[in-house]
Amino acid sequence: MKGNFMTRLIIVLVNILFFNNIVLSANLNNCSWDNKNQTPCLEIKSYISNSSEHSKSSVKKIIINKKQIIESGAIDLIDVLNTIPDINITQSGPKGQQTSMFMRGTGSNHTLVMINGVPINDPSTTQGLHDFGVDFIQTVQQIEVYPGSSATHFGTNAIGGAVNIILTGDYKDSMSLSGDKHGNYDLLGNKTFIYDNSSLNLKIGTVNNETISARGSIDDEKDIVENYTANINYENYIKPNVRFYNTTYLRQTIAEYDNSSTKQTGYEGDNKMGSFHLGLENRNQKQKQNSIIYYTIYDREYDERGTIDTYESEVLGIKYDLSKTLNDYLSFGAGSEYKYDWGSFDNKGSYEASTKGNVDNLAVYSNLGINIFNNTNLSIFLRNDDHKQSGDNSTYKVSLNQKIKKLEFGLARMTGLRNPTLYELYGTDSYGYSGNRNLKAEKSISNEVYINYFANNKLSFSTSLFRSNIHNNIEYVSNKYVNDNDNINLNQSGLNGNILYNNKDTKINFFTSFLSSKKENSADQLRRPEKTYGIDLNQKIKMYLLGDFNLNANYKHYGKHFDTHSSNFSTIEMDSTNIIDLSISKKINNYVLSLNIDNLLNEIYQRPHGYPQNDRQIRFGFRKGF
Image (cartoon, rainbow, N blue to C red; front, side):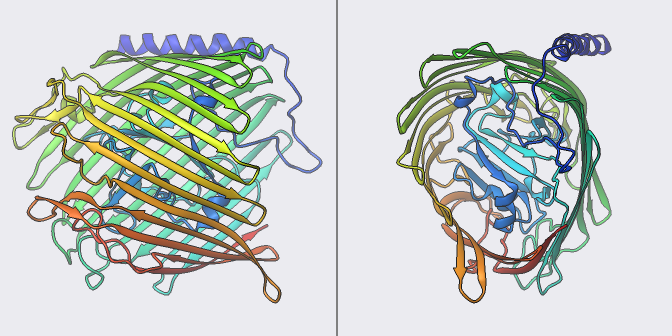
């Protein structure tokens, strides 16, 4: 194992060193520090792995920037992701509780989650899913959502799509605080130190929330969540276009929860996570390169009245990306990534389960972007992942994009994969389960057609139609995980639409999504509504006496869907919900005062069944810039 580890690591290191030597001797253009105004030459750029100038137009993404996050009044990551039509979310109670996300009808373990393009899915989870309930928004600068299979860009787990959390320096010092009459609050402090050719940014956030019981009603005991988050960003421009950077992210979320009934005390989860990135970026007008070494660690404990379940994992990786524009018609990109995953957990109590093991994966990828003629791009992406247990798996994406005056349309075919988790490979439990080291990767094939129409500089329309299926899926049969071999696939298909109106004072986004997600027996998959729709509104209100206000409102209809009954485990139909969140803010000198109302209509509902969600919540806050 050690020999194999070192061989793969050397391959990637040689690759990085070779290409970096080339770019350091290349000519650099004029991006430099503005010492007079003490403002660094930095932009938040959405750099996508395995892409280049003429191929990046084929990558669909949704960006939620810091301004939108603040104006929405969001506290945690779920508050933001709930506004995306391709995403459906279920949370086992109030804030801080375990949360699953279903993107485009795929499973909750089919979404890859990243920080600055680096995967952070926890290897110690049984099925490789990311728990969105423990992630809060205070130190996040931007969120990017990539709907649809993104395996050729980011690798395993991205069958349904990917979520990229952007952490960068925020060069305006600030402090913000919001709270309610019950003593719940969220607090953020941001401070930046700027030097001649470098900067150091510190962000510290904390959240305390106590609203309802995870499994009871509003009259039962309240379950508390506490979150502490720190983000440190350092940059140093070695040359005008050569940037050394470091990102450190630390997060601890402590949440009370209920086991199987209401009014329970003594159940608490302590979820710690850290991520460390060390990188070197080189860019000029024709060429971009990024090299990064990363390390992520999880340390989770669940206390069930003295019975302690422990989960630990570590990930060490190294990654290199190259993007080069050859001329007005041709661009290419290439790169490689090596990742070593180690994890273990020990689940005690009435149900016992454990695992301990490691895997590694070496990926090599490339892409080609061809500008066939004006405003017509053909993009080809290839990637191969060599996994310790599941072996070599190749994925591809082919996309054609065409612009004709105000109309843009495209079509794409793409494949994806999910490698088996450590538990599926090496785990055991008290019911006789033992891991299966012969498991192969789950795979998917997706086809998509999309159309965008820009009526004018204020009004645009967009729609996309997709169909995908997952084969070779991993399922639990007779105390063992096996790859399904009956040639019957899990099928997903959908139609999404958006109407966007944007002028100086008003931004309105109407969205709708129709989804079909079927099991092998053609029955509907659970927790995936067939129909969702809603409106996002951002409006600047001008009043003669009181001045300008900013209004942000989000309405989302979450349609009827099937779920599992929390007591008898039968399949039941859950009713639809209509949730409105409202945020009003006003700037007075260097202060921004805000009023946030979540669940304005005070809708009482459960999602999933047996886990109530918050009723109407009212918070007041302020933000001060320095």
